Amino acid sequence: MNTKNLTVCKSNEVIQAGYQLSLNEQRVVLASIGLVDPRKELLVTDRFELAAKDFVTMFGVSEKNAYKALIEVAQTLFKRYVVIEKPFPDKPNINKLQTHWISSICYMESEGKIALTFAPDLIPYLSQLKGSFTRYDLKNIGNMTSTYGIRLYELLMQWKGTGKREIEIEWLKKQFELDASYDRMFDLKKRVIDPAVKDINNHSNYTVSWTQRKTGRKVTHLIFAFSEKPPEGEKPKRITKPKEKMILGVPVSEIEKQARGTESYEQAAARINREKDTKKTPTETNKEQNYMRIEVIKSLINKNKDFYLDEFNRKSFVTIKGINGAIIEPDLKLAGLFD
Image (cartoon, rainbow, N blue to C red; front, top):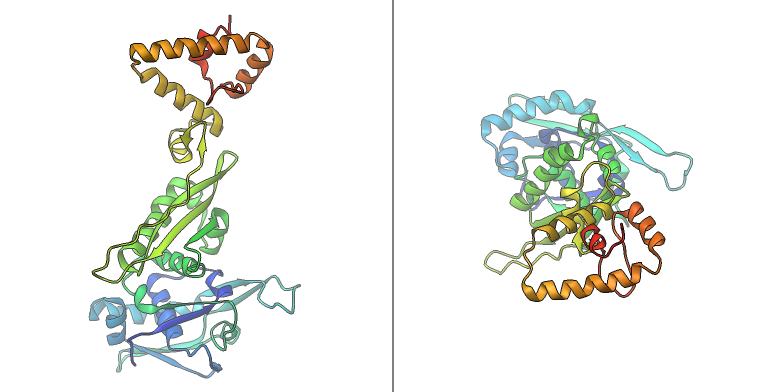
């Protein structure tokens, strides 16, 4: 088998499907898909062979580990399934299709290779592809050591024309079939996101960075920015990261790192500003400017003290038209709001 320049082509329904494969199972599936001509008809009888020596070339493993991997995959891959959402455009009443990846697999010990056939229900998502499908070179994921790196790479390649993709965390956990041990953002980041991003940056043809977005007080989305690496010898292009949102002059990333308990974004930003303010050592000029500012604040809040007291009790800071930024507790004390 010619293992050079294999291209993986999948319908986007499979790219976004829910499934869980081990690293070697993923490698075997992708190598076999790479042998499919996506323009032609794929038959249920078409068999695809993968030898240990090919496994060594494509995925950079030792020959001993390649034989071991193929034996193990021959025993486990038949049991694996994939869940495709909205599988039939002409049948909107069918929400999900659950199908095995393959319909048969065997290991030929004397030849050191496996042979498999794809499951009938999966074939329409691999052959005669038109419209929405994703294509990438197998070599770009060949050296990855994390199945999550491969999955994330595919999700990004689906949107490679934009260089940016926002993914809902709950959707990602569902499609990756992650259990409750990944419910904490810390665990998801440490065990899934960071290893996947590292894999892509170290072993693929793309560079990726990410930030997170909250809905209310909960982190709900991951935002990935990515760009293709330049050819060797060329100066790398700078990745354009999503412009970070600021709240009361504090970057959201800083707020998320320092937020306490049930603090809202605004409350955390106000506290961070307050803490920064207490660390400052103003010059005599700054003291004079601050004195004048306090006098202006005092004259404004005295006109409607009850209103501003109520605002402070709700937000832990006050905003006044004509004065830049949030007015925090130390300045409000000097201005006599609490007298």
